[in-house]
Length: 67
Image 1 (spheres, rainbow, N blue to C red):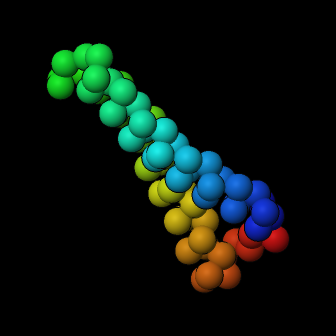
Image 2 (cartoon, one colour; image 1 turned 120 degrees about the horizontal axis):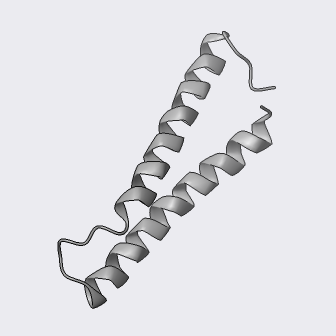
């Protein structure tokens, strides 16, 4: 994975976080409080960010270079 791909995945992860907040707000307008439409999107963003942190740590330690 090269650095530009890493940066684009990081931007996509933060975009997913933003989309989850938008979904949460819109859902609050039309559905009850208990409906969690944005939860899967937020979990996907968290998983992507966790994977990117692992890749960054592997790059810093020299185990696997980003390229």
